[in-house]
Length: 353
Image (cartoon, rainbow, N blue to C red; front, top):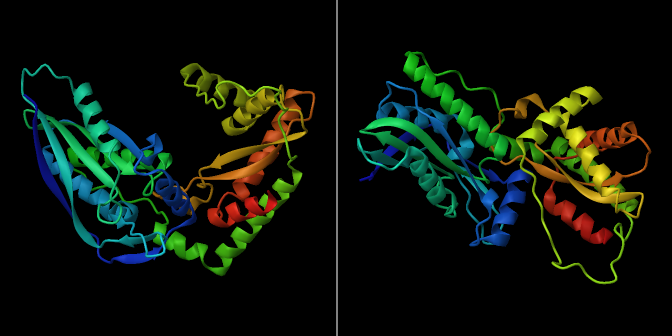
């Protein structure tokens, strides 16, 4: 029979801090408030990793404490003000509860099922962001020996790249503990509170003004009706498709190398080639998502950084080189203007409409 218990991770990180939300956090905050209590898959990000042999549960808990001390986003509460605006409050110390799931010897339940169950329970329950820290941990053990470590982090505290950074850092911390080495030093990264302060500074506001000017320029280029009208509405009215293919990823890397460009530019060029087959205008609207980690100081930042850039995408040209050129120009411009105040951008879009 599977046994469940809880353990506690205590962290003492010094100062507590309070600030407005960053632009990236604000966008996520608005989406959460629009949909909750309905849950969407991207509201909570889940990861799991193996625990090296020779470690005890207390060893794993000690590394979780290291992780919490390093990243302010993981020990942040996100209270809602009286006006509905969000804020962030970083805790200097606190406690996180960890679920410990033990499989006795001879039990037929597989660790795959245990992991799936832990991640499902952690990832399908909304975070109480004003009272609950935005990360949940679980450890799967066999006869008390830790085998797997899982976590679920709110999208307010990390995007997909941020969740990957946390998983890689946890793996390095666990390996160092196994080898008897000191924890690897934290990589230099801007903390969300500092990022929020920058965005409200004169330099940050100038960056936002440039991004909004670019948005206005793109909106002016867009036609009123970029897609051909239908005499009879399609049935179903709305349709969404997703592509999941290991082969496509390999082919994309090979194509990007051959075209001497990035995989993002190549994928955008392929998308453009598909859309132009039914697009009746020279340009069409496209949101280009950016990770916003181009600047070195943001590369290892764990927070919600990704933002979309509305782009007037050109479909002209007769060769693959033309499409790649359009994609390269659009991607470069999107990277330069991706960090912006999303609420101000929405007002610009409404004014243009």
